[in-house]
Picture 1 (cartoon, rainbow, N blue to C red):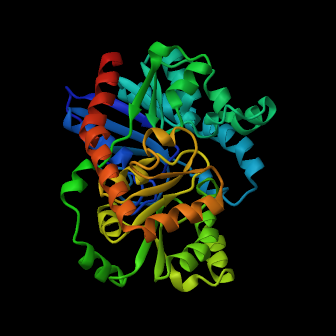
Picture 2 (cartoon, helix red, strand yellow):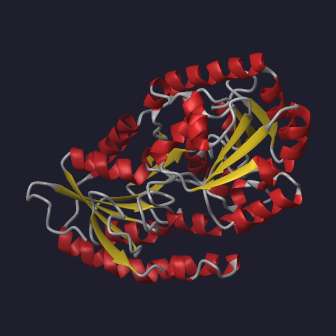
Length: 407
């Protein structure tokens, strides 16, 4: 823990999180939202305290004062999904709420922010019972985006989030990952004045500092004349990584040259994906790179010809945006608000959700048609330069919201 560093005149922010580390996949891998958040608020003169699950990492939230609670998420991660869905919210409230109350009474924070819907009861309690301004930050709204589902299915799939939205907050900060979070929360009856729908931060500067393609390929052991398909995500069921593996044999047959798929990320679906690669006879065409440090992602993008995203929730999240920044044309399932970022035939190709044959055809087109690939790459990079938000800009938006509410 880092304790007692705050100056007397520093305002204190307490972040209540279900995530054990600031990096979403640990070891500087995955999404760095919390890293930028802590850095930005510290630079603005805030002392940031984080209440998070025990991780064992010596620097789980760099620059923050870290307080921990037992990591029941890790202890029960192999339990059946249905059991975890019921158990985790109960354990979170029972474990985190009393610790948060003690911290608020000790630290006297100017604002309490919950990371994800899990924290909504705790932040509501701090707001209502302890008179501290509080809010919840959502990285997206997950299956709440599927408003086309039948009512019974929608409620069953989203019951935890629907319950969480019943607890009033001073602010709901919702990040635009392509799941139309602002619109969804308004439809659920949240006061529009309390909804702050913000863009994701993106390393836009990558567009001017992309590594050399040939040296990147050499570093990664990829031949100069190969066609490279890149997939970046946590390997969880909602990302549907197996779809690109099922499409790859057809892509290899059509492309008429060496095609290589690089999968960056790790998670519970990895064993299944590796098994599919062997069953389909494409294991020699696939590299499972595991978790990659975020600063190395531009090297993978520089070596690639096409980026693929097959999530069931949104395909306009940060990895797709990073690919566009680096001029790598995306081929994505058109789900959620994806088409607001990936404009079909202009900055990438959109495929009907879940259409594996369509995915195969679209990826093959980009790999086989040099003119199309270059046109889409230029369109993607142009859109990124014009539309994407830097991390400094995004964090300044959060800072303005919280400072306006802080006591």
